[in-house]
Length: 177
Image (cartoon, rainbow, N blue to C red; front, side, top):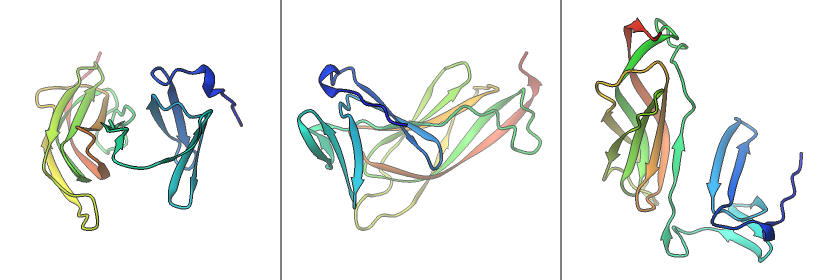
């Protein structure tokens, strides 16, 4: 399927781009990304609009930090043996395997929408000497919900590479009505 959008009619400040990875069906959203096509040539990503073809590279967007955030889909953890889909759960800890060039925020999103943020700082490096870092986050203490979602967001344009995340799920005996 092909969709043609003329970039001349879209304001870069309000432009929203949605991209789907067809291999795993993961969806990404980009704000202010006013290109009508994107491709990879070798190891370089390129994008085009009415002003030409641009190579996407660098650690900033014209000197401004690049904000990045990822968020999982909602889960009720019913795939875990012994966890009832309609029961309330607490997430006590998150073990995060990642690399980062600066501060990153781990976020918990219980089903009621009461987001809670936990800063992860000074762990890991980008560059030739990359190393994997495991970070323990004491998360969402006292918050209980049937549904949960999780995310990471960079601070001040810090790069991050999430490798894995293991969550300590504590099912409660009470069910949501």
